[in-house]
Amino acid sequence: MADLFSLTTTDNRYGRKRSFIAPIIPACHLLLPRRFRMASAYGLSLHSFASAGVIMTFYDRKDAAAVFILRIGLVWFMFLWAVHKIITPQQYQNLAKNIDGIEMSFAQIYAVGGVQIALCVLAALGVFRVFSYGSLAAMHFFTITRQWERYLDPFALNDRGFPINRNPVIALAAMAAFVALLLLIHRDHFSIGGWLRRHAGARWWY
Image 1 (cartoon, rainbow, N blue to C red):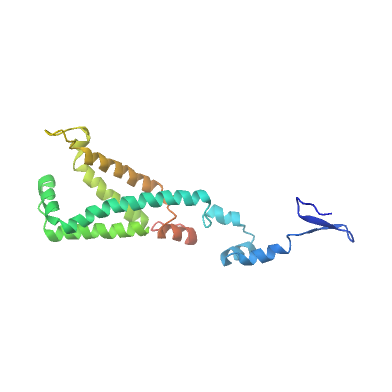
Image 2 (cartoon, rainbow, N blue to C red):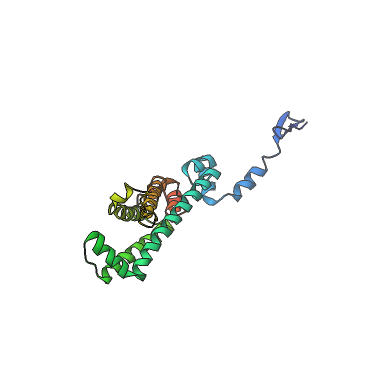
């Protein structure tokens, strides 16, 4: 008589139990990717692959989606400022003179904007993640250090009643997001670096 819970039946001739699913297991095994079949031959289980990060769970994918949204949002934020250096170099030339007290040529401003755009592309793809994410974060931190006094009075108003220190406070929020991105880089699965890490092992340059 068949046992519905173990999916076995008793062989009356020999008194042994046969499994209904035993013939199915080899067929299912052939459906697995080659690296899983090879690992199975050496006694590794799919749980081992999940633990190693090769197979992503539902929560892995959810975390990866959250980090992906965070990364793309920050890249777009920095990309806009970088492109504006190419479009309106005169504005940044005046900012460098009035805030930093330095003279910059259009060629220098174009070079800075080009470097920032290249870093944004690397960060969007998730390539050289520690370098690209960290470089964008460092550039943004430099921007913050140029206007510390404005953070001490975030509710200041001008003569017309308009808040004049609102943008610097937004910059602080973006800096906090950069710190969060760097701390969550190990959950950044939806990137080229994350894919390489899962399939080729951890490397600092991923």
